[in-house]
Image (cartoon, one colour):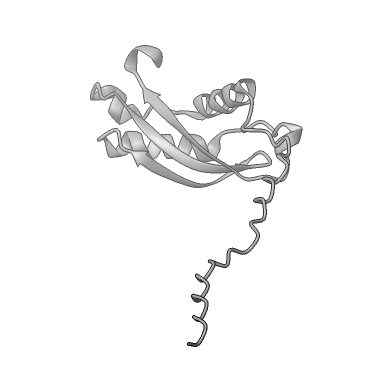
Length: 129
């Protein structure tokens, strides 16, 4: 009687050695955004350039317009209305204020960088009388 054949070995799953995931890249201390004082200076420059349209003033119109723009080294570009005041003449005045503003120079950390900004431009008859 022949000797019994050994049972075939169960196939062992081949698992490649697991490598530890690479560490995350070292975080550089990049500034998160302009300082509140710079943001305030930018807002003040835009408010100083704001001209309440006479027709809107005479008609008792008020409102606020949300504008977006790009800022780089003291200059603005790509100015647009994000949320309309509902009054075209006020929206156009808000865009003009951003374009005409004598914007401050950037903080050193942001020199040469383009910042995307948004802010509200308010038209309040009580503030402009």
